Length: 412
Image 1: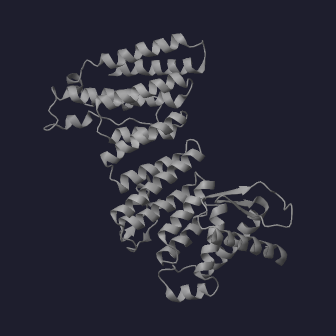
Image 2: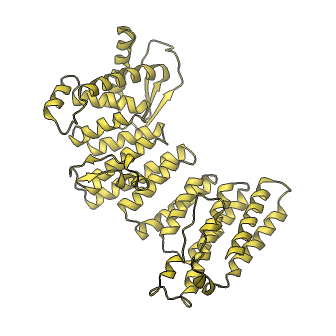
Image 3: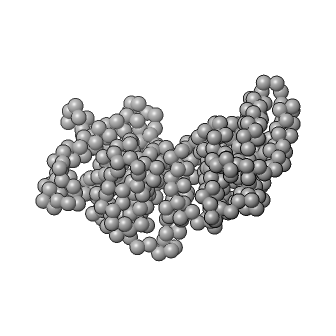
């Protein structure tokens, strides 16, 4: 800090922030108010209807003060982990006690949650049981109300859920972030004691809250990839892709995508659900009818057309798998493993990811009459193209889809 007066102002604001949390333990929303200079001699911390606000000018003071103190404390503890060296911990705590660490770190992550060093301090305090799992989940949910796309906050929640529900001896990011587990440079291990034994009802409540937080974050930030990816992580790791839960999620997200028709991440989540559900022709036809209605009511939204590609791809796969049972014995041949090639959500031209067996012998056997699905699609899209004004965005999207469908047809 530049001088003692500035530091004293930061301490007073931090004290007001702590008092707000004591008086209102159920605060559920946080924001920084666009007040660049103090307008009167009053506290910059405001609470209204369980929403906490901090004036911008004070946020800078508090952040610099708290972050500086934490980094100074951390430098005294460098080279020793809080959990592994009692002597060093005691020495460090002569500077900052756990309650002080909690209040300082809370202020920092509310303002800037991308400080992973601060989250790591809180992990160590949680492992030492200076803060409860529920309190930590509550704080991270509050952080997401202001920073709904924060990857560090979602990573912290994954770590807490791993701690609470897995009870593993070692949890590293091969469990927390499966897509990154192959990169050794990204692996960071934390020792996880078995601190919680959840009943079925407690686990259900915990996961319902996680779904609520994901929905809140998705609604606050459009195309929130981090929120939807976290939701997928919960289903995979805590529900093991339970079919009943997946179908419930499929029904529950219908209203969301109906109101957020440009949200690619929301539709990607539905594609994940459909890919892991018991796929039947009726479910896929229902989804096709649903997306057709949205395209008609909300013209010119690219996300809807890309989701339609996924549905047609899934319908084609389902038809070919059922028909190929009559011509291919997959139980005694590895050729059957080539039947279903996953749809690549990120690839615009998905022709290379269609159901195309690599074996030429198998390819000959798979000459199945699937013209019904594709011809029906072509007829529907021709009507849309003819009904739209020339060069309208909806017409351009329909033409791009028509080009895709014809390429798909020529390669299958």
